[in-house]
Length: 97
Image (cartoon, rainbow, N blue to C red; front, side, top):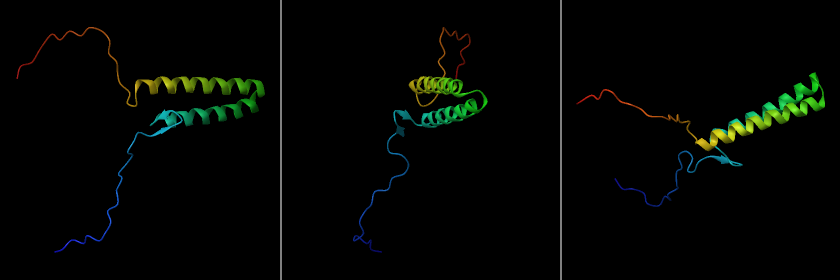
């Protein structure tokens, strides 16, 4: 059977070719930042209705500051959370094969 060579080849992209990044946030931390922003807006609305404008503004600022710091600290460690075990490890038994 003959192959038709008159068809043009088109590149097929499967998945992301580069890591996902938006405004300095990478991967899953985009969702963390969006959740922080949404939580700050909802916190401001609830605080404004329950307490008042100034208290709601302080609550909004605290939520944004805490969420932003936590997001940047987690992102700095890497996209995949890793456990850092510090100390000296003594292996008392070594198995032979």
